[in-house]
Amino acid sequence: MSPALHILDAIDSTNAEARRRAEAGETACQWIVARRQSAGRGRRGRNWESETGNLFSTLLFLTQKVPAEAAQVTFVAALAVADLLDAFAVPGSVSIKWPNDVLIGGQKAAGILIESGAHASGALWLAVGIGVNLAHAPDGTERPATSLAAHLRPDIAYPPPVEAAAGVLAGAFTVWQDRWDRFGFQPVLDAWTARTQGLDGPCMARLGHETVTGIADGVAPDGALRLRTADGALRLISAGDVFFGEAA
Image 1: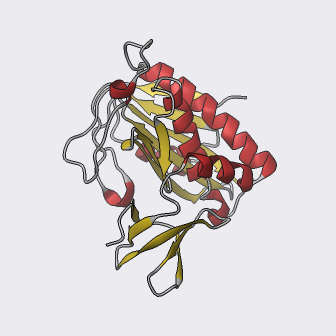
Image 2 (image 1 turned 45 degrees about the horizontal axis):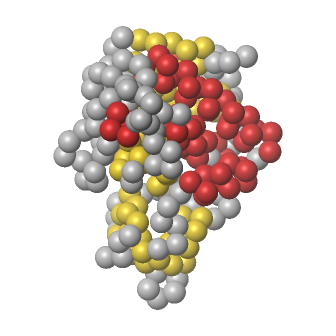
């Protein structure tokens, strides 16, 4: 059975609503979609601009996977978003930046925020937050951002409305989640790697307490970024702000 799709006119944050529902004991797999957010959040506590016409969504579901394995869902989400954008964007323009930024024409068009917690049932709840710039892109971001509207195929005049985009995203996510559940992480990682740029060139990673530079050396079997520093040491980066094409 496909997850229910709840479309709300406005909310503080779809991830916050998912957390409230999980902590209230809800067990149903469900998408929470909003046309507008008043307190959207990105990674590392950043604000996520929530202009009407863009997609703000969270998939809430329970899993028996251990947290380290459950975290692989970020790669599933990135592939689903890429498939959504591929359905409308100029062919060949969509790519992924490690670990889960989805780009159009090399500029960020979507972001993913994964949150989790212990459910009363004993399972782990996962909130897979996905924001996609369908109609508008924010100004003043650290790296250039773009929207789907700026990269539409010539035969498409307008980006899809929120309801349609949410449906395409939900369908794509189901496909990739099924592959992950049935065959494990490797097929997901292989598909993700085929879409990802910068995994073999100069790289800078900001890890909060330090900045590490070197050469990206692909990804580990669990999806961690392999970063070879100037002294030859290998660092495995599981989370952080990573900039490819930069060694200093």
